[in-house]
View (cartoon, rainbow, N blue to C red):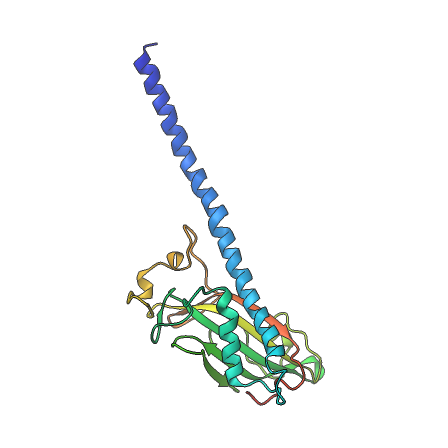
Length: 241
Protein backbone atom coordinates (compact mmCIF):
# COMPACT_ATOMS: atom_id res chain seq x y z
CA UNK A 1 0.00 0.00 0.00
CA UNK A 2 1.43 3.39 -0.91
CA UNK A 3 2.80 5.33 2.04
CA UNK A 4 0.57 8.33 1.40
CA UNK A 5 -2.56 6.13 1.77
CA UNK A 6 -1.30 4.65 5.04
CA UNK A 7 -0.61 8.17 6.30
CA UNK A 8 -4.11 9.32 5.32
CA UNK A 9 -5.69 6.38 7.15
CA UNK A 10 -3.64 7.06 10.25
CA UNK A 11 -4.68 10.69 10.19
CA UNK A 12 -8.31 9.66 9.79
CA UNK A 13 -8.03 7.25 12.73
CA UNK A 14 -6.45 9.95 14.89
CA UNK A 15 -9.24 12.38 14.03
CA UNK A 16 -11.89 9.78 14.91
CA UNK A 17 -10.18 9.00 18.23
CA UNK A 18 -9.87 12.70 18.98
CA UNK A 19 -13.57 13.26 18.18
CA UNK A 20 -14.52 10.48 20.61
CA UNK A 21 -12.12 11.66 23.31
CA UNK A 22 -13.43 15.23 23.50
CA UNK A 23 -16.84 14.30 25.00
CA UNK A 24 -15.11 11.94 27.44
CA UNK A 25 -12.72 14.72 28.44
CA UNK A 26 -15.59 17.18 28.98
CA UNK A 27 -17.50 14.65 31.09
CA UNK A 28 -14.40 14.10 33.22
CA UNK A 29 -14.03 17.83 33.77
CA UNK A 30 -17.71 18.04 34.74
CA UNK A 31 -17.42 15.28 37.33
CA UNK A 32 -13.97 16.27 38.58
CA UNK A 33 -14.57 20.04 38.84
CA UNK A 34 -18.23 21.09 38.73
CA UNK A 35 -19.85 18.34 40.81
CA UNK A 36 -17.30 18.53 43.67
CA UNK A 37 -17.58 22.33 43.61
CA UNK A 38 -21.39 22.16 43.91
CA UNK A 39 -21.10 19.71 46.80
CA UNK A 40 -18.55 21.98 48.45
CA UNK A 41 -20.97 24.92 48.25
CA UNK A 42 -23.61 22.83 50.01
CA UNK A 43 -21.23 21.76 52.76
CA UNK A 44 -19.94 25.30 53.21
CA UNK A 45 -23.44 26.72 53.65
CA UNK A 46 -24.29 24.01 56.16
CA UNK A 47 -21.08 24.93 58.00
CA UNK A 48 -22.09 28.60 57.97
CA UNK A 49 -25.37 27.71 59.73
CA UNK A 50 -23.52 25.52 62.25
CA UNK A 51 -21.05 28.30 63.01
CA UNK A 52 -23.95 30.66 63.68
CA UNK A 53 -25.30 28.20 66.26
CA UNK A 54 -21.97 28.07 68.09
CA UNK A 55 -21.66 31.86 68.13
CA UNK A 56 -25.24 32.38 69.32
CA UNK A 57 -24.61 30.02 72.21
CA UNK A 58 -21.42 31.77 73.32
CA UNK A 59 -21.37 35.43 72.20
CA UNK A 60 -23.13 36.81 75.30
CA UNK A 61 -21.76 34.45 77.94
CA UNK A 62 -19.35 37.10 79.27
CA UNK A 63 -22.19 39.60 79.79
CA UNK A 64 -24.47 39.92 82.79
CA UNK A 65 -27.42 40.19 80.41
CA UNK A 66 -27.22 37.12 78.17
CA UNK A 67 -30.06 38.15 75.88
CA UNK A 68 -29.11 38.22 72.19
CA UNK A 69 -29.39 41.63 70.54
CA UNK A 70 -29.96 42.59 66.90
CA UNK A 71 -26.34 43.73 66.73
CA UNK A 72 -25.23 40.31 67.97
CA UNK A 73 -27.23 38.71 65.15
CA UNK A 74 -25.69 41.00 62.53
CA UNK A 75 -22.14 40.39 63.78
CA UNK A 76 -22.68 36.63 63.94
CA UNK A 77 -24.15 36.52 60.46
CA UNK A 78 -21.22 38.39 58.95
CA UNK A 79 -18.59 36.40 60.83
CA UNK A 80 -20.12 33.05 59.86
CA UNK A 81 -19.85 33.78 56.13
CA UNK A 82 -16.13 34.57 56.23
CA UNK A 83 -15.33 30.96 55.30
CA UNK A 84 -17.06 31.49 51.92
CA UNK A 85 -16.12 35.09 51.06
CA UNK A 86 -12.33 35.64 50.91
CA UNK A 87 -10.86 39.02 51.81
CA UNK A 88 -13.36 41.84 51.35
CA UNK A 89 -15.47 39.99 48.78
CA UNK A 90 -18.44 39.85 51.16
CA UNK A 91 -18.69 43.63 51.43
CA UNK A 92 -20.78 45.52 48.83
CA UNK A 93 -18.96 48.56 47.51
CA UNK A 94 -22.28 50.40 47.59
CA UNK A 95 -25.96 49.42 47.75
CA UNK A 96 -26.41 46.22 45.68
CA UNK A 97 -22.96 46.38 44.08
CA UNK A 98 -21.30 43.05 44.90
CA UNK A 99 -17.72 41.90 44.29
CA UNK A 100 -18.83 38.34 43.47
CA UNK A 101 -22.31 39.03 42.08
CA UNK A 102 -24.17 37.52 45.05
CA UNK A 103 -24.58 38.36 48.72
CA UNK A 104 -25.28 36.89 52.16
CA UNK A 105 -28.78 36.26 53.46
CA UNK A 106 -30.00 34.26 56.45
CA UNK A 107 -33.28 33.54 58.23
CA UNK A 108 -33.89 32.88 61.92
CA UNK A 109 -37.16 31.35 63.14
CA UNK A 110 -38.10 31.20 66.83
CA UNK A 111 -40.50 28.30 67.38
CA UNK A 112 -42.34 27.16 70.52
CA UNK A 113 -43.91 23.75 71.09
CA UNK A 114 -47.65 23.75 71.81
CA UNK A 115 -50.06 21.20 73.23
CA UNK A 116 -51.26 18.28 71.10
CA UNK A 117 -47.84 18.01 69.42
CA UNK A 118 -48.28 21.31 67.61
CA UNK A 119 -45.82 24.21 67.16
CA UNK A 120 -46.01 27.95 66.57
CA UNK A 121 -43.55 30.40 65.04
CA UNK A 122 -43.38 33.43 67.34
CA UNK A 123 -41.11 35.59 65.20
CA UNK A 124 -38.72 35.52 62.28
CA UNK A 125 -35.59 37.49 61.57
CA UNK A 126 -34.16 38.23 58.14
CA UNK A 127 -30.54 39.36 57.81
CA UNK A 128 -29.10 40.37 54.48
CA UNK A 129 -25.94 42.08 53.30
CA UNK A 130 -26.81 44.35 50.39
CA UNK A 131 -25.19 47.49 51.80
CA UNK A 132 -21.67 48.20 53.13
CA UNK A 133 -21.37 47.57 56.84
CA UNK A 134 -23.24 45.08 58.98
CA UNK A 135 -26.11 43.01 57.54
CA UNK A 136 -29.53 44.62 57.74
CA UNK A 137 -31.87 43.10 60.36
CA UNK A 138 -35.59 42.81 59.63
CA UNK A 139 -38.03 41.19 62.11
CA UNK A 140 -41.59 39.99 61.52
CA UNK A 141 -44.10 38.55 63.97
CA UNK A 142 -46.81 37.83 61.43
CA UNK A 143 -45.09 36.06 58.52
CA UNK A 144 -41.83 34.74 57.17
CA UNK A 145 -40.13 35.54 53.89
CA UNK A 146 -40.49 34.33 50.32
CA UNK A 147 -36.79 33.48 50.15
CA UNK A 148 -36.78 30.83 52.88
CA UNK A 149 -37.86 27.22 52.59
CA UNK A 150 -39.34 27.49 56.11
CA UNK A 151 -43.03 28.25 56.69
CA UNK A 152 -44.51 30.75 59.16
CA UNK A 153 -47.31 28.82 60.89
CA UNK A 154 -49.02 28.79 64.27
CA UNK A 155 -50.53 25.78 66.06
CA UNK A 156 -49.42 23.57 63.19
CA UNK A 157 -47.67 20.26 62.83
CA UNK A 158 -43.93 20.91 63.34
CA UNK A 159 -43.14 19.34 59.96
CA UNK A 160 -45.29 22.01 58.27
CA UNK A 161 -42.87 24.65 59.58
CA UNK A 162 -39.74 22.66 58.83
CA UNK A 163 -39.68 19.02 57.64
CA UNK A 164 -37.10 17.89 60.22
CA UNK A 165 -38.42 19.93 63.18
CA UNK A 166 -39.12 17.92 66.34
CA UNK A 167 -40.29 19.86 69.38
CA UNK A 168 -41.99 19.14 72.72
CA UNK A 169 -44.75 21.19 74.38
CA UNK A 170 -43.24 24.26 76.05
CA UNK A 171 -39.90 23.76 74.34
CA UNK A 172 -38.25 26.54 72.30
CA UNK A 173 -36.22 25.96 69.16
CA UNK A 174 -34.28 28.22 66.83
CA UNK A 175 -34.09 27.36 63.13
CA UNK A 176 -31.31 28.98 61.12
CA UNK A 177 -31.27 28.92 57.34
CA UNK A 178 -28.32 30.49 55.53
CA UNK A 179 -28.00 30.93 51.78
CA UNK A 180 -26.27 32.75 48.96
CA UNK A 181 -28.66 35.24 47.38
CA UNK A 182 -28.55 36.55 43.83
CA UNK A 183 -30.52 39.31 42.10
CA UNK A 184 -30.80 39.90 38.35
CA UNK A 185 -30.99 43.67 38.70
CA UNK A 186 -28.04 43.98 41.10
CA UNK A 187 -24.55 44.88 39.89
CA UNK A 188 -21.00 43.72 40.19
CA UNK A 189 -18.68 46.16 41.92
CA UNK A 190 -17.24 47.10 38.52
CA UNK A 191 -20.68 48.23 37.30
CA UNK A 192 -21.71 45.21 35.21
CA UNK A 193 -25.32 44.12 35.59
CA UNK A 194 -25.44 40.73 37.31
CA UNK A 195 -27.80 39.22 34.76
CA UNK A 196 -25.27 40.04 32.01
CA UNK A 197 -23.15 37.17 33.36
CA UNK A 198 -24.43 33.58 33.49
CA UNK A 199 -24.95 32.10 36.93
CA UNK A 200 -22.70 29.27 35.84
CA UNK A 201 -19.85 31.78 35.58
CA UNK A 202 -20.85 33.72 38.69
CA UNK A 203 -20.58 30.62 40.85
CA UNK A 204 -17.40 29.46 39.13
CA UNK A 205 -18.60 26.40 37.21
CA UNK A 206 -17.32 25.28 33.82
CA UNK A 207 -20.46 23.53 32.53
CA UNK A 208 -22.95 23.18 35.39
CA UNK A 209 -25.65 25.81 35.98
CA UNK A 210 -26.72 25.64 39.65
CA UNK A 211 -30.40 25.29 40.53
CA UNK A 212 -31.92 27.77 42.95
CA UNK A 213 -33.75 26.64 46.10
CA UNK A 214 -36.29 29.47 46.26
CA UNK A 215 -37.22 32.45 44.13
CA UNK A 216 -39.23 35.64 44.59
CA UNK A 217 -39.34 38.46 42.05
CA UNK A 218 -35.84 38.63 40.52
CA UNK A 219 -34.17 37.22 43.65
CA UNK A 220 -32.85 33.66 43.79
CA UNK A 221 -31.46 31.68 46.75
CA UNK A 222 -28.76 29.05 46.38
CA UNK A 223 -27.29 26.33 48.58
CA UNK A 224 -29.52 26.86 51.63
CA UNK A 225 -27.94 25.37 54.75
CA UNK A 226 -30.18 24.71 57.75
CA UNK A 227 -29.68 23.91 61.45
CA UNK A 228 -32.17 23.49 64.31
CA UNK A 229 -31.00 23.94 67.90
CA UNK A 230 -32.20 24.55 71.44
CA UNK A 231 -30.87 27.96 72.57
CA UNK A 232 -29.13 28.28 75.90
CA UNK A 233 -31.19 29.75 78.71
CA UNK A 234 -31.74 33.51 78.55
CA UNK A 235 -30.64 34.04 74.94
CA UNK A 236 -34.02 34.31 73.24
CA UNK A 237 -37.71 34.57 74.15
CA UNK A 238 -41.05 34.95 72.40
CA UNK A 239 -40.27 38.67 72.25
CA UNK A 240 -37.93 39.38 69.31
CA UNK A 241 -34.45 40.81 69.97
